[in-house]
Structure formats: structure tokens, C-alpha cells
Image (cartoon, rainbow, N blue to C red; front, side, top):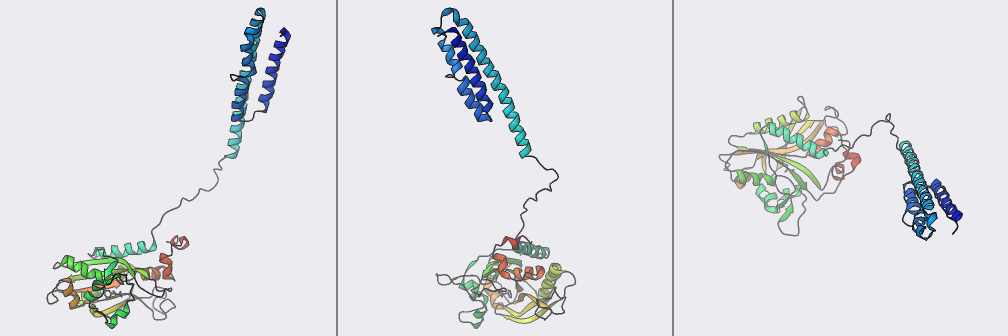
Length: 346
Ligand code: PHE
């Protein structure tokens, strides 16, 4: 190997390295270039291992030159690295620019289901009047759902409740919250009771805008000495005023339920037309919101209270009905359809 050739080789190594570095555009390219041009098997590095094969007098000069080439490559790499990083920072700044004048994005807010909202209102109103919330079971026996409520088998009044029966004889899905009356009485006798019982009820109905196969009821129950129809009226009227406004007009119409005597249904003045008559109240000016009555002596006795000593009243209302009237919801099926377009309106 001639003297000149070694130096030419070194020069070529430097030039090729610098030329290749020009092409490097990113971090990965820098890494690859470092391995190829400054790594263990890079040409400049191999030059060092070739030194012992050179004539003795040539070694210091070649070694020195090789060192210079290596340092030049290192310096070029550092410089290129700066450029690449600066360029990628510029690009990042341009692409990730924040427009501080853009309006902020509304975070998604959770909300309570309209059913939960109306139930909480009802609970608050009754709690204010001294009533406690009780929970009863969804799966009931024929005995509790009907018989203990003075509705024997084959009684024509059973027609009022289309029932989902289970495959186990005598076990059914409650058709109303009234069986809870018996549970509460049996758990409380002979103490006086002021309770409300909310819960899902199930009926084998033809589904329509006004009828669902499942819906809520809130049962109201008061048992004690000297409880009169006047107490019933005062309680349901107090409820209506707190729920719908101080000046709302109400009326009780005679009705029939096997577990109350006398029985009534309560109407409130239609809040859509103010009592003049409109499609919502079907021209009557009144909206029915609950069934109620004085507890039947048989039911009191079945609950463990002597009807000669105790009396009581009960009422049952449909919260979806109330929510529908207040918010003018036209179809009860919206409640359990889980359609966000509906739920987001509350
Ligand atoms: N349970 C009755 C129904 O489902 C409502 C009601 C409850 C009526 C309590 C009177 C007393 O229709």
C-alpha cells in the first residue's frame, strides 16, 4: 500500500460519510448513519486496525489523519443532528399549533334518567310529609300480589291486572306495588306506618304509547289509629300541590279496587290547557294520576292489624305518567328504550 493511497482512502471515507449524511432526514437515519460511518466496522475504524500492517514510519501520520477524519465525521454528525432536530421541531410546531381563539369543547355531562328525576321529586315530597321509603320485591307470589289484597282466585277483578306468570306455580312478576303493603305491615305491626314503596311493575300488556310491559309505581301507605278519608285527601292534595304547584286544582272520583273501600281516583287539572280541555286531557280538563282509598279491613287484618282498632289509607301512582304530563312526553316507550336523543333532553 502506498503512502498516497492510504491518504486517498481516508479522504474518500470522509467524503462518502459527509455525502451520506446530507441524505439523512430524521432520528432513525442519524442512528443508521452513526452505525455505518462511526460504528465498530465503519471504514474509518477499520483503518485503525490496519495501522499495524503499515510501514512503521507511516503509522503516526496515518493514525493522526484517521483521527482527524473520525473527529470530522463526529462533528458533522453532531451538526446534522442539530439540523434534523430543529427541522422536526419546526414541523411539530406547525402541525400542532393551538388556535387559542377556537371555542372550547363542551365536556360530556352525565345526567339522571327522567325516571330517577321524577322518583326523587316524589320521594322528597313524601319525606317532607313524614313518609319513609321502603323497597319490596319484584318477583312475588300470587298470595301477596292478589289473595292477601282481597283478590281471590277467579275473582273478576283479576282482569284489572294482566299478569306475567313464571314457570313455577304461584310465582309471578308483581303487577303493582300493592303487595308491598302486606310486607310493610307484617314487618311493622302494631306500630303506625307512613311509608312509600317505589318499584318496577310488570304487566302482560299490548305495548302502546300509553302502555308498557314494565313501568314504575309508587305505593303510598299510612296505617294507625283514627286515620280517616280526610287524612287521605289531605295527603294526596298536599302531594299534588308540592309536586305541581300551590294553585293546582284536584278532584277525587269514586272508583273500585278490591283492597280499598271506599276507593277513588285522583285527577289533577290539566297543566297543558289549564282545565279548558285539550288533546292531552282528551277534552276533559283533568288528568288521572293515582288510585287510592281507605284500606279494606281484610287487608289490614292480613297485614296483622286489627281493623276494629286500626285504619289506614293507600294510594298508588305512576311516576312515568306524571313525568309524561309534566314534560309533555308523548310515548311511554321512550322511558326504557335507552335512546340517547331522548335521555339527553333531561
Ligand atoms: N295497585 C293499584 C293499581 O295497580 C293502585 C292502587 C294502589 C289503588 C293503592 C288503591 C290503593 O292500579
